[in-house]
Length: 316
Image (tube, rainbow, N blue to C red; front, side, top):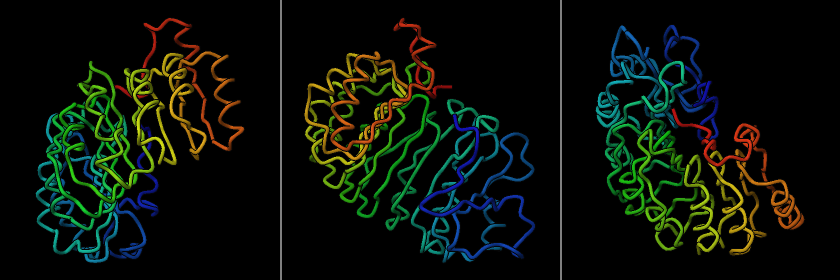
């Protein structure tokens, strides 16, 4: 779970509106990604009232990126007030191109405690949105949507419901270039199967996809095996299988599968791959110009060779 709030979003530095004294001294509306939040515990005002204050101080018509921080009691209630406030302001947010919902640190709310909601209405309300992100998987919903502009989609969870993945997979997103899914573990609601990932691996439904991250999973070996023969890999620039329980089974499959030498970057960090296989990966791929991240983040040492002690980077 992130220990700090987002510092950059959609190529813009974040600016923490909440806590600011008012309109005086604020940056130009289109120069930052605005972060709007309330206290996650014992908030004095609800999030929608804080958004009203934001709308009075900032020219909404020029806002390009918006980061939703904590809403009141996020550990037990979803952001319905957030969705209502934002969809109600859709006409005034005519320049909005990026939206992130749930930018909370573990001190505000653990990722597995964050209650979410059905997010498809946000995408439908903002057809010009190019980047969308969500943190927290509890009660998260993603009905299939048709969205011609979305280029980047990021879902961060400690356990991702397979229904959400299937909803994304059934969506029509012709411009989608980046997909980042934190799949998590079953103990925290992760029910995604490798079969649920088929629409992303086939290379057919998402023709613009160039950057694929299927990570933070206790099924990381199985996912790597599926990626090894996946048609989509041939057109990817980056493949990210990091943060999970990837070991020799998955690594061997990647080396024996479709060529990876065309990739710009392969991220396998936080892994359980043996030293011998790491050397093979390095020799075969870095020599071809692929940037490979094999930093194990101490995971291999913690597991001490026992698969029962493997863990993902972010769960609770």
